[in-house]
Image (cartoon, rainbow, N blue to C red):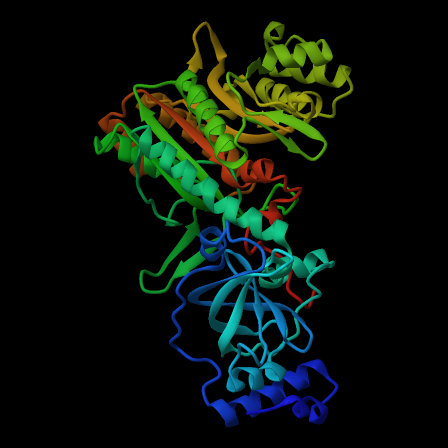
Length: 498
């Protein structure tokens, strides 16, 4: 086994030093990456068990722990090792530590993973510590760690090397632990509310359920062009037709071949659900109950900070009719405007640049985005969308140009989209054909009519409420993350060469 003199014979290059140490370790102890090691408890379990141990007290309890070395002091006499649950201090000294274990100390670098067996004590300064009797090398790290207290300052490098980001950034580590808690919390909430979880295809021969550019691929055996799904909607509705369940949901990955921003990633997570014999009012209530539950699980309260804002997820949320909001912001009363031409003229007169072929509803929605969205800081449901941009929603009684649809906003971000779902098969076909014609006019020649979905609707779908929630954006708010890439473990990014 190597001794302290070993360090004097090693290279000055940090990476080369580690490679040389690995070679020596292989020669002297054999397996530096053993397959079998069994700890008796995690660092967090150890900390909890001995929470009340008084300072300067040593137990007779022998434990075995493991973790990555984050700091080493006094030539390895004191080391801090971290596992996923937390850290523990290791003390090695000739009075308590065997000669073989002490001889290993010069070969241990920051970043190595070791196993330690020893007696639990608390130091005079109050630090819970293990007096090491035995130390085992479990993984030799060949690359130096970033400086722990500063982590990765290069933001792009944080996303590219997420393992180092989490390793050196407690905020990042906590955020992804909270993400897991939020996703499992959504699943638990939906199941407790009586919803059945199903799985629908990610590879689809016809893409639909939303308006977006898809990713295209090819199935060699079937000799068939296929698309990564942009939404699970049409398959989930077919499940509702089947009678398998009256309440169905899926936590799904969707793919849209579009722009990247602080709120957009080409691959993202949604929770989408359908509830037979419910409507958009029921879905608003569901959103409020879900958001409140998640806030309580993460923060212990429905109020929390996002940046410099104080948000409240306590329901009921404010209802904001789109036409009324636009009228209040601009003075334009779209409900008094009768034609597309008049809508475009009114928008232009108010200084908005609208396209020459835009419809009444497209003008209304555009002005809403321009003048109202940014004001929606606290959670709000924007209701009564134009029908001509909402092909799957039922009309508002007495106002055929509007539909029973809402989008939930917070911090000026859209978080959810919901309808009283259209289930009239003839009207559904008419709207989908119209949507298809518009897509072809925009150059989306590969867009097709989903006849299998229309066949299912012909069989009869019960009246229902439908809802989709952008899980990543919701997690951003709940974890105070400024970018969607901060909450996606391995976000889309440019190649290293770029």
